[in-house]
Length: 211
Image (cartoon, rainbow, N blue to C red; front, side, top):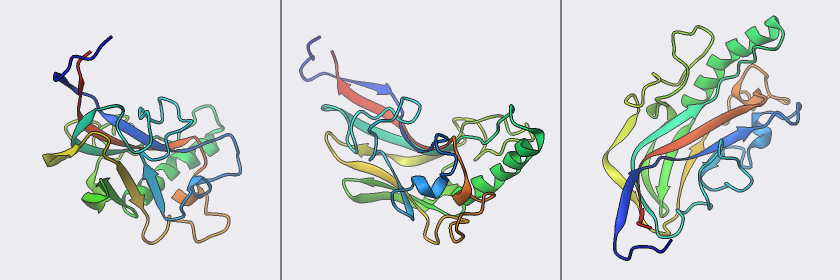
């Protein structure tokens, strides 16, 4: 279908990308999947990922002539529960969840770059997920209250223009907790085994040509 020249549509369309710790190799841990020992980059490496990991079509830029108004930034983590495993192992994983969540949000800094300019930079605890399992369930640790209203929102929209590069970086200035040991401590973030995901979500409005 042909584009309607000079006419744009604006729709609520969050964009997301994730860091994935796979369970295909039982020996690999969180730090083994990091290409940089102190930084995880989102919206940059999108090739080979499924729709569960990202909805980006190209690395670091929006498709075609689209632009985006970012209104909120969220950091979401998957849980570590495996109901089918032995009870003692399941309890270990449940206890580890709290350690992993705090390892991410209190030991890292999340930065949004648009065109190489820093748009916001804060410790990750500043960007609650606004999603997840209800916190009343005792064996799940959430990053914030599971409500889309309980998230960080920009005072003014952050515009990502057509073909403008952008990315989010999650850096660990003092290293990933547990990384100082070899092999990493299995009860810490560095020692986490998959499947485990950290998503960064830019919630806002996609502006594109009408077709």
